[in-house]
Length: 79
Image 1 (cartoon, rainbow, N blue to C red):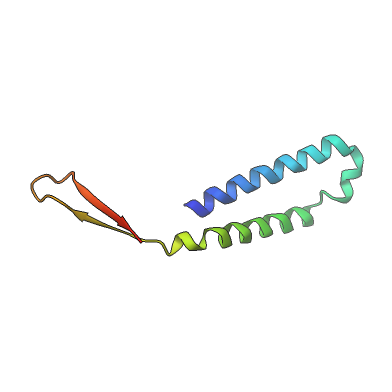
Image 2: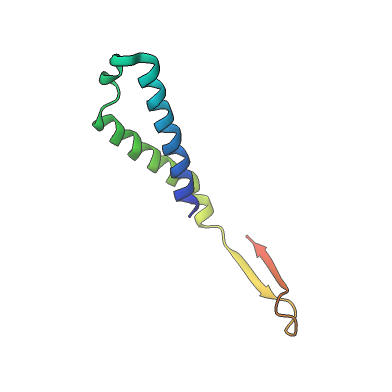
């Protein structure tokens, strides 16, 4: 889930930069803003987001129940 959230954030920034280029450069953006470049950017951002979040995939937490009578009390220890 965290990987998807980071990807969505980066995609939103990429679309904002794309729109900024269209507004600021006008018709000259046809050289930069193509479908092929958009796909390259999407693939690069996805790979970058996966590389950033890999350490969190290996992080795990153990949840133990403290009190058998009170089932709402738990202790979480993350490593």
